[in-house]
Length: 78
Image 1: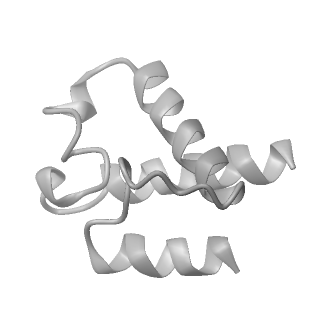
Image 2: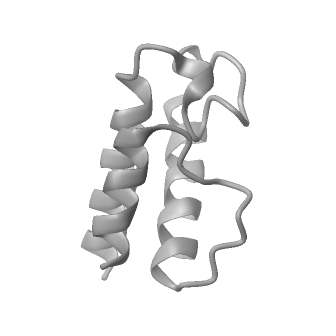
């Protein structure tokens, strides 16, 4: 479970970091200029998203903003 949470969180952050428009990502909506902030801040947000999604709580505060993130989230939840 820890490996799945860690891997999914890291991949989700990678998707956001490599998106063309940072403001149109799940973390870019929450944190301005997240690419130039501490990696631990991104990791914390990623782990929070991953655990909340895996536990099927899904508070909705962090959610997919673009098609790539939505597709990844669908497969993660399955």
